[in-house]
Length: 523
Image 1 (cartoon, rainbow, N blue to C red):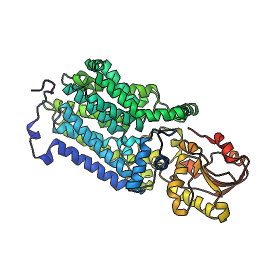
Image 2 (cartoon, helix red, strand yellow):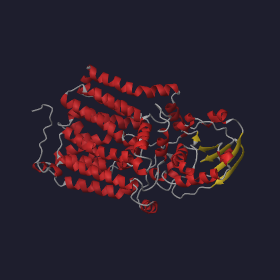
Image 3 (tube, rainbow, N blue to C red):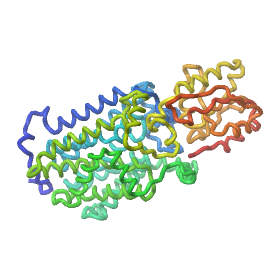
Image 4 (tube, rainbow, N blue to C red):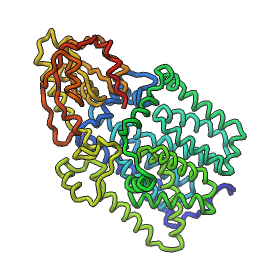
């Protein structure tokens, strides 16, 4: 017998046909989640970040002001392989969400859990509210949990088998994670803390973990060099965000209360059971690296006043441990707890599903929201002024905005259109022009927000500029000899910033290339 095996015996109910086995049930749950995402993928419209990521895919580089390069590469692949429809763009996130459910089941099997443990962990992962949003929109968040949990799976395998060579694969996956989102570094830091606080620190005396670290660094190096070459845009962006107070900072108590909401209240309790199982139970103590990793990730984001969803990619490993803990606990007592947890988990999910998935029309959602006994939490101050939650609101108004810009643009004589620039006040507005504008014959947009500023004004002089989303019309007029409101926007569900007027401006007072540095808007 393997000395590292966990002494949890499979119950007789686990000895059944494959289609009813734990692994099969996990796949059924994953398939159900995939189908739900595909059915709702085209319900509303493109999200602001999605259009920006697609634009980044047209400017492939080793970095961007607000993100590493992986999302742009994926956007390029999606555009050239699947197309630009909502279903095409959101297919990859949906698959990532279903795969995360499968991976939660795989983590349970590594912990030694049986059919119920796999079912509960997969269900908790599938039902976590934040994962509905992450698996719905084409953003870096879609595959971040997969990368983190892939690293967690490797840590478990290293603990169980003693195969230190697996740190090489950990390093490769962590390097990929850093090219996806810088928060991978927080998870990696958590693993290091976990190693130092447990007997697994012996790995630090061997070469393989250091080789893995070098591999991660080499994979991440092109983005580091890009940031050096561009004078660290991401750090400047973070400073600007903090100085402007854009994000809503909350204290530790509220931060943890939001964790309960984001992860499904019942799911949070399952994760808590998993954390306690790893820290206290004889069978779970060998995996304490993961418990300390989880706690370090939470503590780090609380200390840094990060957004409430930042630590959520770490939860599936706690769901997996929680499934094992509850399965073992109910084997000898309180057997009724198993169906009760499943029913409670599904009930809460069904009750809160409209908040995280576009199952309702906007009108019906607003009726639903009015009856909620609590407000839907916001992470940025600008989100508080929209009628819908941010992940819904930022999907509305884009076709109407682009159509209005097209009417203004196409009303100009041909010789004027050739020198007319379209300036987007945000990366989403510029991205909407780039994605939806070609059918109207619109040129690609320019802008000062995030990476659009790096892409420059191209050959435009500023003689004629259509300005979208100006936050201060009078300030904008100060740049030009004349500036008039050419179109009004009034979409009832769009964010207020997307309902600002479309301006037609003439005669920039300075050459556009000279004034461009003043237009940088990194926030």
